[in-house]
Length: 417
Image 1 (cartoon, rainbow, N blue to C red):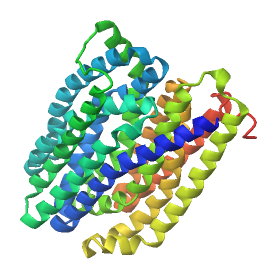
Image 2 (cartoon, rainbow, N blue to C red):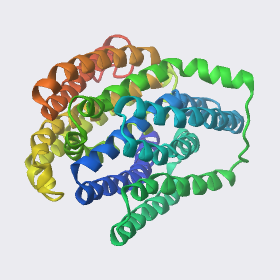
Image 3 (cartoon, one colour):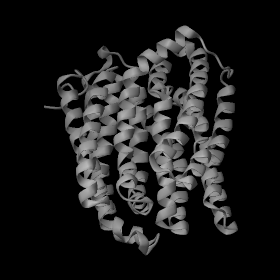
């Protein structure tokens, strides 16, 4: 398992750099927008981003997870598989672009927000196509090959952000940075893949239907997950106003850098375990997984403690207008521990092909989260939304641990009581 553990660590490191570079650049942009434009405009942009993110997951329809497993199991068919995945994503991105604009208009009737949706929605094309290539490199534990494309994109992101601040760009111009930087990433990543194999759009009916059938439970669970992860923003905007969304989002954004690391680790675990059959899950592998889980809990707990201690100072760096988010950030800091652990547990369950288990768990989580948000937000405002998120993630952790212990045999064998 030494070699396997080294490959996981190396691939995770590369994934952290890739996701971290783009993620931190994006968080920097959003926090600078929060500082520059104030809670109302920042809240409007946050609502648009939430709608587009939900539509992106629906448009992906679980293809990223399924293709990672397919690439891992049968590498000889990678070129045909990628070509079909790209074609499916082009179709779904077009439908998603139209849907994101329509949904935002239907929910919020805000002309300025609709203009932002027209711009931010184009990122559906860049992100969905980019993720198709990333799935190939992730499946082969070779994310280090595409570090350069992510770093160039992140540098472009930061450069354009500071140029915009210096030149006093409008909010719409700042929103355009998101798809523009992703396009740079997509072009470089596709050219790197092109050195390995040709990039061709394909739409084989048999392969496409096979992908869609396998992705159904993954899609249902992914949609349920993104809904309960972003429902807080949407319902704060529904019950309160854009300014409240802006204040809440300012607190939420500070938890995201921690999750970049843990989600990157989960992708490496998923890709690595997907290559192993049931007979390959030795006691040594099980003990390694258990040590990884223990490390994740320890590191995420430290991160949560730091966020809680420095919450007031962090939000004060943006503007005094966001002081009401201090309590929100302290509550959400606890959710970092649950989310970090949940990402690894989900990767382990999915790697065994037990997608339906995660689907059931995700639907239960969504139901709980909707009930808590409807109960807590009208009564406690943005603090209620933070409580709903944290409580849902806690329940999620319990359910996934029960599933691994009783329904996904062999993962921890003798490592767990």
